[in-house]
Length: 272
Length: 272
Image 1 (cartoon, one colour):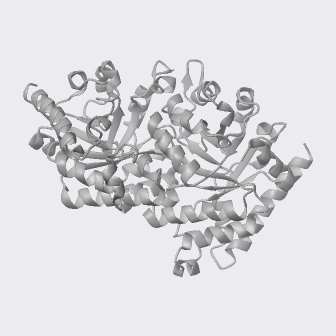
Image 2 (tube, rainbow over the protein chains, first blue to last red; image 1 turned 180 degrees about the horizontal axis):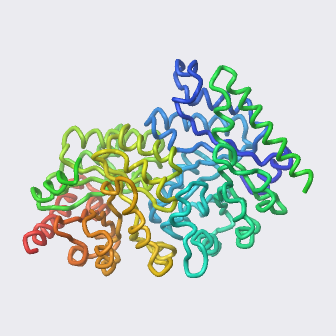
Image 3 (cartoon, rainbow over the protein chains, first blue to last red; image 1 turned 135 degrees about the vertical axis):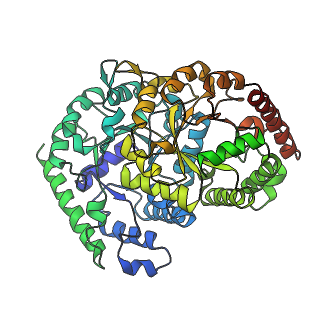
């Protein structure tokens, strides 16, 4: 999917919502556990109930790998289901990968070719040659960690590196990498005041923003400081939507939570 | 496996060699491609031919994920084969994972419980709460990236953070994390002169050292500056061993390459 197509979907749906499919068997409705593939069934129901309210789904690979081969099968069935039934959706493999060049190429192959995701999240610590193999794929997007939403973000990301915070160095340095037009960045919503500075460095880039909802970030604050002329934001909510109910009405309740966020987004888009 | 048991194996085998099982279907002998699981067959032959010369095997997960579910099955069969037949081997899942706390817990479950590896590599960028869930496992080891062997290491890892290089900040900060006695570190062999400084910060920790062989690092230089009283080094070689031959004699040739490194290590251990 191209960035232009993503923007068209945002305008059409009046939504820049991404729903995180972080499926924990301990948290899903009990009646699903009797089925052959509870994780996929859960995702299928959530997706069918919310696809018109969001522009993106983001399974976090950890939740699938934790269940071994069965989990990887659930992930594959989930991405195939989205690509077949809702090809307009921008899919994100939240995998936070990164390795030396030839190894990163294998990860890129895994997520862009084998699973056919539109994008994958990567970690910046190993530098340019660990990220460029992902950037080499046409019409695929690489979403690099910049400033994350967790407490540990303050351990290294905000440390002063030769006059500015490390996450700013990461943003600036990556702009010089080959095919950097395929880069997006992860910026946590729990730190809304940082968006002003970030937009000075990457005015045009899409930012994937976790931390709204369960982690305490404010949607309006993020939009105030982070939105650009072409929206430039994908706001992720995971637990707040998918675990809105642990009963048989889980998909309907998920839709209600997604609708609240979509309506808030529509209002923001109409009033800017 | 405990660190003490690992050290006993090193003393018994006169080897601190780790063999990287980074299996690329384009590089393995053609006759294996006719078998049902070429990746596992390749690994099984390499392992049977080298297990007495090394103390550790390190499959890099990228090479398995690139082949989807079949690849994940090959990884599972490989770790099960090692654990069943050579339980004295220290196994490393080279996965370079890391995410917010509850998500890192799922990765830890994947590698320590579902697959039953002794250790897993992690990335430091997201800080303390992204690594502590791995450290919480008893008799399991978390190997954190400090200074990697690739060119991109100079993009961020060696940048000056409040008076010292980022990788030194990573080493020092992580020493204060809960259960940090379960931490080892990745330090690339291509930068042997850095080991003196690193040993001042983490004198006792085991260091996993990639970059000997194909990437150009020198074993004797690394040992000169990086070895401690309890050896404290695991030297990895991947391509130089497993792709020593692309013919039917691949396992025998791999043994010959592993033997050269083991003999060099035995000499170093005897002369220190």
